Length: 373
Ligand SMILES: *Cc1c(COP(=O)(O)O)cnc(C)c1O
Image (cartoon, rainbow, N blue to C red; front, side, top):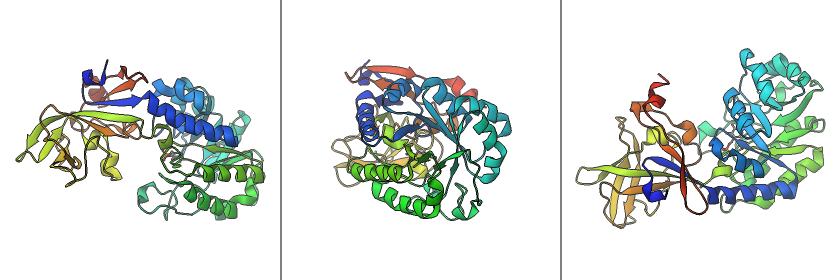
């Protein structure tokens, strides 16, 4: 199939764009000896996992289901971090994961020895209390009162000898300068513990595949930490793996109010929730800011939520019912966050090969709505 033949709405993930990202990440691995995992919470399109697995070391999970998906579909290194594990999930988690990261000393005490005895590498997540982002408070694990990671002052005098790793995750869509600042704070507060560790995980939020990202500084940070402390460095980016690797194809269904508002068959609330949550304005192909091009429209979703508005965009030509629009950078934090509010259909998932041929991977129907209720 060609793009023009696809039914809307659908997510199209592009092999060529994904490979471009993967080659950049593989370069970092090869030049530094670090290991890079896919943070599945950003992108869990598992039909791509065999391809991703050729370039990456494995998967990172936020809970039991992602852990199982990583084990089933990629089958390489599989790490897990959760703010709290449930007793009833622990055996199964241990069967899928080689690295288990705890968020508190109480959880470490409860499960750590059992995990270590099962041959798992146990780590503790730390909070270096070093905020490097201001724009998105809800994405800042170092914000005051954060529940993510233990503080330096909470560390006991001695750690059990089976604790092998330190994990931090404090960044969001940031460059390597923010990592360098964070590493200073991590060293100051946790450096003495690092000498006894086997690994350190720098978390995600490294926008490595974005144009202008300072890869050299990232690599210097990795080399410095692994040389100084004798540890393996892990990164677990989500965004950077599938950045700019997907589109959301949508259609104009109606034009309202003197043709100033276009209703699409895609919803911000259901299909691009970060537009409302973050919030941000998603890039749209062949469009400009309000006032930049001759014809401007408010693009909005079909749900009953008054605020289901994607933004105001301008075009060279008037929009009309039946026109197709392509939202860009729609692979990450989209499919994994979709919902069926208002009984909205879920967009189908399409793989676009390097030769431009499209293959529908999944399509959804009424039962995907009904089955959860
Ligand atoms: C969200 C998250 C990631 C991935 O973050 P990106 O911003 O998508 O790179 C990695 N590790 C942890 C612990 C996370 O919570």
